Length: 219
Length: 219
DNA sequence: CTAGTTTTTGACTATGAGTCGTAAACCTAC
DNA sequence: GTAGGTTTACGACTCATAGTCAAAAACTAG
Image 1: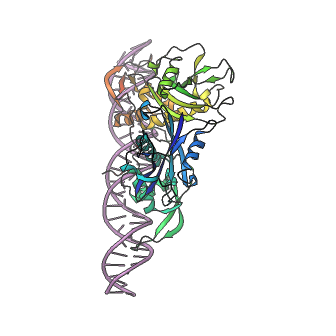
Image 2 (image 1 turned 45 degrees about the horizontal axis):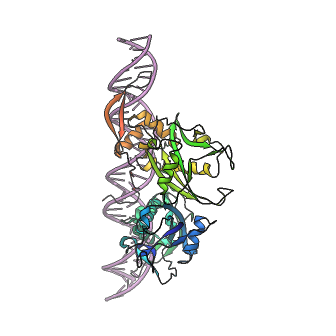
Image 3 (image 1 turned 30 degrees about the vertical axis):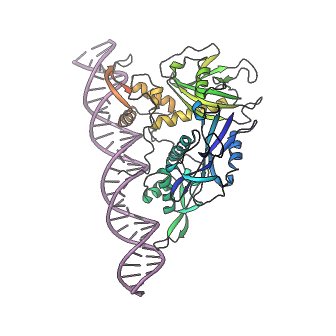
């Protein structure tokens, strides 16, 4: 038997959160699990994960999907031998997709009791995201279509788990031609203040930014 | 049906080469394929790839194995719907494992006609290796147990596909505490010259060297 | 001893990135 | 309208990593 699973991540309330649903049956009754399900014969892995994800969330609101890894340990499910291919999905800040009653967003930093090896898979997804944010334009999948630097900074802080200077963020992403100003401005929060410039990501497809310059000669 | 495949890479004759075997039967009769085979029920993916690899090469001579990705496209095998999980294996410079008569090393830059989607999988393996060489100590799996800088440079040039300065290589890897001098020296090639210092990798387990310093504050 | 070869070392430079202070642009209250 | 508070943007400075180059060191062969 082969299953597909998805770690769907979104920045909500300033924290990186993952979409989980609560099991109603044994094993792991009451524990929280990743969305997913069995692969059908003739089906592609990506088709499968999109089909299963559709029962939990509108797939059109998932801005990026990529394969994470395939798990096969005997310890992962006490009742059966089963392979599972995990995917990573990203949802933009600000969207609030409808989800079924048994489904909820949970901060990755405070995971509830999870079913099978799903807790470890969530953490693997977060690590993948952190790497991609640093050497690709993956931020486009987590940020709204247009955003101020303060908003983008919030996304990076939540996903990376450490402080990020807005000055640096802008310089680095503009130098790498990942983001560009739209020319618009947007008034800041309630307390007044200088209006912020509005930016957008240049590409909305995943692009590797700097393919490891280390050791490459300059000419 | 689920299969496991391995992209086994080694630097031979100054080039990055991959272990392939020639198919005797249709489909793709005469084309070159990656070692691997079907997964058995109850078996782990890693157990499976090690079992199949053992028929082509002494697995103890493969110094590092990691999962690459799982392929499922309908186009990958014209005759059947089959999933395949690909692994990356690395063999140290200088070893010359025994291989069966139908099996041979091929430079990755000059692949012969390959079966199924195996050509693309080989290239994916090379890309994974190139990334890992830049941000981990993956070189330990490709270099001999002890080596001079000239030897290590040869490994990096072959694997990365571009020139690498020995001066830089030493400084970067020593700064990151990836390699260390053993204290020994080794006379250089036939033409005399200053004897080279002998180095070794500090760890022979995969370690991420610099987890993407970008945007992390310094204090 | 001299010439040739290879490796090692250090100085210099380029570049990317972190820090900090100040200026700019807006709001609200008086 | 002006003063004070708030937020964003910008520029100067510093630091760390890494690429380039040339000279010194350590050997072999003749």
